[in-house]
Image (cartoon, rainbow, N blue to C red; front, side, top):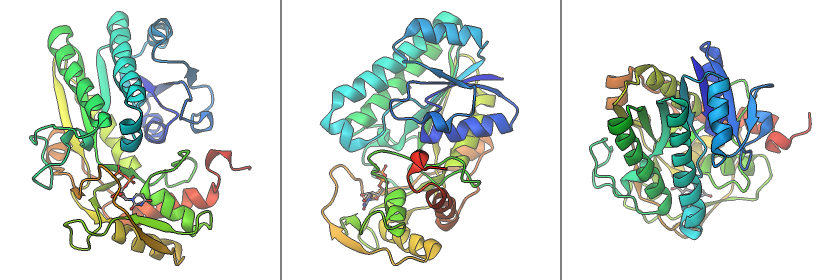
Amino acid sequence: MNVLVVGGAGYIGSHAVRLLIDAGHTVTVYDNLSRGHAAAVPAGMLVQGDLADRAKVVSTLREKKIDAVMHFAAFALVNESVNDPSLYYRNNVIAALELLDAMREADVKKIVFSSTTATYGEPDIVPIPETTPQQPINPYGFTKLVIEQALADYAAAYGFAYAALRYFNAAGARPDATIGEDHDPESHLIPIVLQVALGQREKITVFGDDYPTPDGTCIRDYIHIDDLGEAHLKAMEKLEPGKGLCVNLGTGRGTSVREIIDACREVTGHAIPEVMGQRRAGDPPELVADARLAKELLGWEARYTDVKSIIDTAWRWHQSHPQGYATKK
Ligand code: UDP
């Protein structure tokens, strides 16, 4: 298929691009490089542009004879969304609607959309099944939920075929270490801990150990970035006009902050000093996927079942690219 990967210069998008190419698809990346990296895109595949530029999106869809779109071009930091909701509603909602309407105009109706566990808010039942009420507790979660709803409505009215994939915690890097995670500033747990191991930070601050979990630190479901990407390819194959597929992408296993830090110590062989800090606002104690529906509907399940194997791929990337994509070769 000819696939337009919107946000293909970002962390998750760039990994999906490699998997699409490996599977024989023809890829065009559409990205404004506001947070992504040109160096993360294979040569000749990048169209640099904004989603707000409807004419450019439509002409790209037509010129490249696009069959399906994968949309990764959203902002994804809870804290930032609380402090600057305008940024999130504009980029994650308005720009996404521009994309959907450009697709209508170009008569491209297949889309795989990056949704999130943040649409569930603070669920009572963990592991979290897809039937959990979606009650987000921050602007980020709301913006994603708005687009899930828009997709359902576009499917019913215009025959869109969509998948909304609700990610848990994406982690790791392509095992050959050619691409990986590079955010500025970095706010995610695993890359920060690995930056301590590299000597770029003094210590890791654990955001609270008084949560109702066995060791008191928050539990998350860390899923390898290539497992996440593979699920997108499977979802793309299952798209049906007028229908939507809403599934969790996680491993079904939870790991606490403390367990992640210990696993990083084992993988890197570094002591990794830690200090206890305050809770970070908006962090639910435990988010773990009920991952059964993805297996049932997509025939997909995570291959990286051990966090150490995920951290190992991240560590290879961070060691070979200590300054991320800015690392001098
Ligand atoms: N975390 C932490 N120290 C840090 C960064 C993150 O203790 O410097 C914790 C955070 O509170 C959360 C978990 O690590 O419980 C995962 O955070 P991350 O930002 O990686 O992902 P999120 O779950 O927020 O999407």
